[in-house]
Image (cartoon, rainbow, N blue to C red; front, side, top):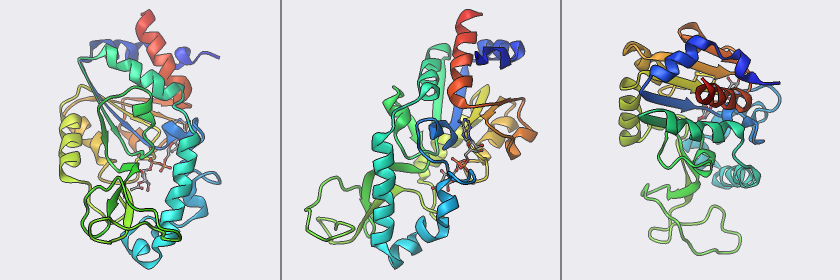
Length: 250
Ligand code: OAD
């Protein structure tokens, strides 16, 4: 079934007129690559684990081995995954706009693997590590048997994934780049996010406040649907290729 039929002509025209597109993605865009989302019932990671047990600095201090191993498991899922049709279509959209800013809450690096060179990684990247004590990025360390998590070669502090945990601030540069991209676009697309986690969820509100048209792509409605100009309900891996086809054939 072709999803082009679900893309209203009015939206295609709005996209053809737009010059500056900003996109915010969430875990829903990677669902079709086999990476579980956070909040979906049954398959969501958070359905099996309580986030406050695993994704906070306090949890890491309490049980660093558990948290490190949980992230190792998530890394193995990501290593097996490939960008899907949604990631690829999104990278093709770059040709249709003067600027395309891509902000992702995902830490899986799949947008980069689909060809995006500049991605604002709002919640970090699971492939990088940093020192818990000094906060600086660490890419190499001595592998000592049984040492989990590994230790920083400079200060001996524990290494942790370079992701943003609950209760932690978004790095200043990242936040200001994302806010600027949201304030300076004429079209804003929110794809595969439940729009529940701030400050990411507030980016669409910034765009709306500056009169950008808001497009949501999700398999279900979210709080953002209430003020979006277009809500396209369905899998991103079908709808995004449909949008690219509609833009290239109209
Ligand atoms: P959620 O799990 O909260 O939401 C996933 C969204 O994707 C839901 O609204 C689903 O309906 C939608 N969805 C599922 N499959 C889809 C598909 N094939 N196509 C389109 N939409 C689909 O994930 P996020 O909104 O990304 O933060 O969660 C935001 C943040 O909460 C994450 O970055 C993470 C988490 O706590 C941190 O770890 C700091």
